[in-house]
Length: 186
Length: 186
Picture 1 (cartoon, helix red, strand yellow):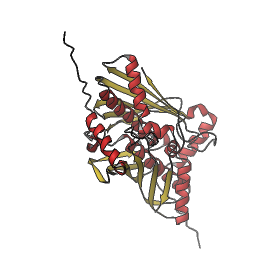
Picture 2: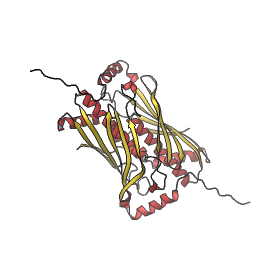
Picture 3: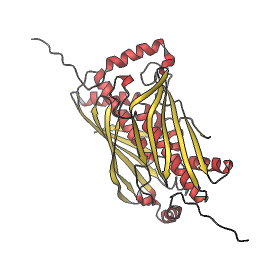
Picture 4: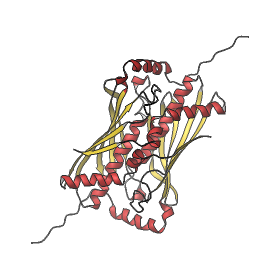
């Protein structure tokens, strides 16, 4: 009887990523990236942000398109609700980062994914941002991410995929560890 | 000679926010909010997220519309660049949060804003996420926000606006301080 070898295809080019790793090992300064957005105040709590250029591999780079985002506060804060709140954008980043990581790790482990979905929920006591109680922080007091994954793998293998994605996730790191943020006025 | 009192209008209903603060002081449990997104894997590193429902003021709430977001990796990571990277969404959240705060604080201080714009840049050594060097973190090694503000105010008053916005910003807090993130598979 012949063994059949199936190759998972999750749409992630792991070969290219491993090649990049080898190339960057020779030229580590090419691994220094700078990601950017510009934000313009519209009115009230409504702002408009764009994402297009970034720096990496030693030079200026550009996304294929210019991506635009509106943010605002909801109507129950007496605002116009022209977009998600800023904190919801952070949750979008977290879900997207862990999900991309799951696809990349599954590809590397030759596990075929059929579907991956997640709910990401951040809890917050708004007495913080309203300045009502100085013992309440402004940000989330906790975030919970719940994945539902259908894949050609055992439950243990699926949990291991998620754990490895978490271990290499940029946004998971950004949320669970402090980052220096400098704010200047020009 | 009569003094003329001008009233700034930045489109933020500060009266409503102060009223909310009084109301929440009576019913602090109404200040417990839960912000959410759902994320669905599309293919490769491409995911699709939606933002609509949230919990607050003691019940389920909804944005006026369902907001949708694509995230992906850029072509130089051998991906399709269907949207910004997850970390760029985090920067969008930071810029939007500080900008909304500046408008709210300016309104409260009766300072008329004419324009507010910012560039937000996060630097990252991608040797972290590529697993090349365990001493390199996955996330940003630092973020720099640069505001340009035109307002009926002195440079010192403008700097004070930005400082107060920073002090009350949810996303600034989320980035500069650690948050517990629980990731589960259902």
